[in-house]
Length: 173
Image 1 (tube, rainbow, N blue to C red):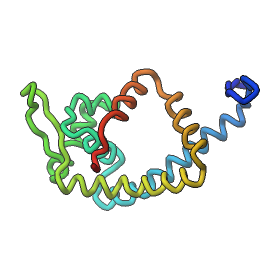
Image 2: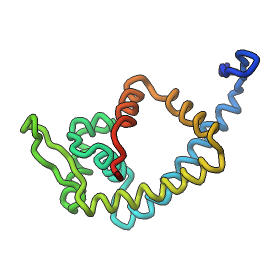
Image 3: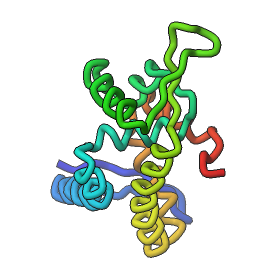
């Protein structure tokens, strides 16, 4: 079976036919790239008895300070029970602080503590270094194409969440 991918070229629109084998190789490349992308943070997390769910929570709390528990549930796409386990550990260990909502006292807003911010920085710096090297090696056109492919793989709701995050200021500034 072949899939058509439309690309615009200088002479108009070209069709690139992708075979199942080419698609399979792309899927496998994605699996192996994800394994490499998560390897460095996984080593750091393992020393603390944390997993990837802890890392994702730290990342998104850092990205959107004051994020509500409900919003974090939506972003992570996990069950309330699963998130509660992760948050309880992060709060008990002094990495995350839960505050009463400013607009709605029933809401819980999440913030990283200084210790949480330091850990998140350590985890993401390893990933930024890997991405920086890959982007430099691939070049600007490949980077733009890679982002385009990733965004095209997202369903509309996920893409909307991603777009909203892109508009937030960089938390490191």
